[in-house]
Length: 476
Image (cartoon, rainbow, N blue to C red; front, side, top):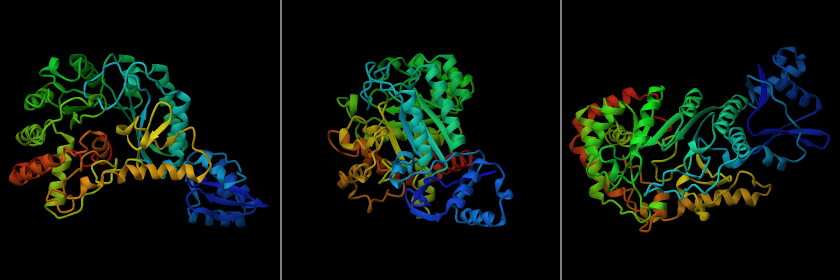
């Protein structure tokens, strides 16, 4: 066993002595030359604690009891810093709260869906391997959390070369061990022209795959082209052992087919991780027609009706299932909702704090749904800087995002549905032309539906909680 300094702490020279200094908490304690050597030995020599003199062992135990030193499985080497400002090069306070990191490995895309909230095309850029590895190191070293999810996103992430992924995934696992963090890797793909070799690499690396299928019943009318190829790749991935997640975007082209789509997915794809998100007219889809509150609710009611008929044992939509849980555990028991680990589904979501999104060039945004909006650019991975103004700018812009358009929440506190509400997506609201929360009225309609169908929904609730007791926290 080895002992290392807690995350964010370093040995800083102070005249003829030294200080264990933490980037967030300041000076933790002063140590002399002898104590410094003991700290370094504990990090570099396995089992050295038992070999120390009684005096040195007592000093080391005090540091361990104060949690300034923590046990680890592998050796580490430290360098002495001459100034606390050098910590900014090693430890980035921007990442201290991160639990969910969206990494856009490319802005290129080979599909071009009509409603896409991105502005992706085949002429845009890729993330270099060096930048990706640098980002992973900085985040894992800086976050105070032991578990983190990294979503590989785009554009279309599978356009990146196989060799890029081989090196990138190898580095993640090495960094995971080095910094003693647990990393869950996810990848959202359109499943167009994904090779079997690449799928095998993703499977062996333990990646969780998700794709989008909007209308397998009438694919020619869908806003997403090439549905048949997507379905083919989805089934191939399942045959390789993947539990593929599927996102359906509720839009004008499929609202009348929702019931049939639920049956089709259950019959053809089996028990999948499934989400049905509402289309927002933003980004490339800014000119598409928004759904009315009634249309959104009717589509969601058809999914709920399917879930009731199957008692939650077949296809289960994740957003609605979590809302049903909130209905039974929060509304009926008069409890405050728990904030999800990812940070969405809350009035003040985790964007800019527990959740960050990084562009291929290293630009950092509070959320992937805000990319290309320069107003909310927080900083860049490669240009952290040493002055406090850079740090303040990061957090000021994150706060600016949360403080804008506060009027949309004015009636929330007195709303009867507040115990089940997910509050919509703030990023989509401020990017839309109307600045309206199009999911507000459908939530009220669903709340009334839950009250009217409480007994029928109880079986769905019990089945979902029983089958997902250890899976509900975290990401899709």
